[in-house]
Amino acid sequence: MNTKISFFTTILLVVLTLSSIAQETVSINPILGSTLTSGEYERLYASNLLSFNGATPDSVVFKTILAGGPYEARAFWSNPSREEQIVYNAFQFDNISDALKRRMGDLPTQWKKIQLALEDGSGSMVSLDLVNGNTMKAEVLLLQGKQMLVDYLGNTIHIPWWEIENITMITREESKSQSPILRNPNSTRYLFAPSAIPLAKGEGYYQNVCVLINSINYGITDHVSISAGTEILSLLWSAIGGRTNLVGFANVKVGGKVADNLYLGGGVLAGGHYSSFLGNSTSVGGVLGYGIVTYGNPQTNVSISAALGNYDKTWGKNPVVVVSAMHQLTPNLGLVTENWVLRIGNIDGATSTATIMAFSGGVRLLARKLSIDLALLGTGGYYDGRVSMVPIPLPFVGLVSKF
Image 1 (tube, rainbow, N blue to C red):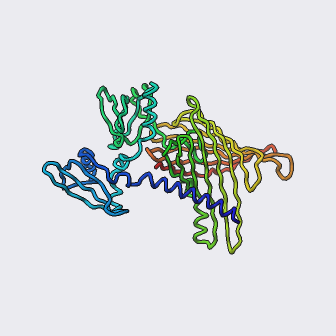
Image 2: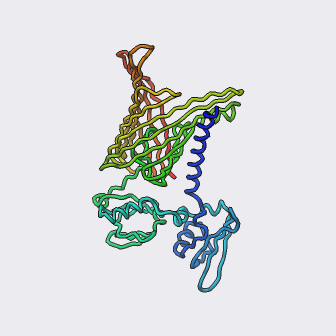
Image 3: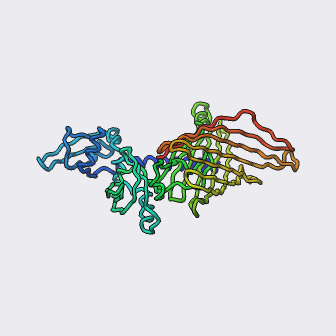
């Protein structure tokens, strides 16, 4: 019994840890005590987020009045010498510009990659998505603290990183092309199975599969990510059915690029089910180890993975083999497929075997931090010289939202 409770306690702790990580990424605390320049104030004023009677101050300082709020924005003018203040509650203050929140945070992961590219001469062409909605292709000349010096259409421009929503490193040929740069917010996963392409450090996303399965994924480093989740029907059953019924899972994945267009990865997925009713309890658990080879890039790739599991203290004899692929057609549309094959032996106590198959195909709708998968799933098998198929495919809907 203690072992069962310990297992689900571990799952719960992982979920809570990931949730707290996600919350920290939108914390307003880092900007308290910071100072805005008049130019930064103008951008907030234009967005109707901050206004001192329409007058532009020389600087604005944010600070907290009491622990946990309320919050104060105090503006200063040097000529004539005066000051004003606005007091916000926590909800109002939390709505002040995502760009401002990023301003006091860590430099993005791409910043370090650009610095390495500048040092080794491998190329420093970038596509920049700015917080004002514009996109520009430019060559990075120098990184100075939290400012980027770029060559844009022959002009030298300084861009502070808090004005940049997203950075994509591109080739010089791509910089000359008039075609839009393709970005895939969900390159680390197909419909359900993962690719070997890793999450970057600090990146994370929420995933929902067919409404029922919910999980959070987070990159601890550029090569290691963790995830945890649960299935919602069991939680509802526990809430209204008068019994405890819990399903949970957690995953650790390691992956990275080992050569041009080649990624290797692997990980361990653990999950289980715990049920308790009228003092009687049961639980089962399992663990799955897997390896992945991915060829391609974040926009177009194919993966082959194999997994072997232990369920209820019994190891499987044959691995599950998964072949998956994705291809991005436009900035907002892609194709995705995921196909599973499992061979089962000792059917009916005999030496014959059966092969179970699940295959899928669909479209992926893409936005900057969101992807939605709409697909059809088919199942079938091969046994005793006969192939059988389920005649009606099942619908699949998946959502990934990056944070």
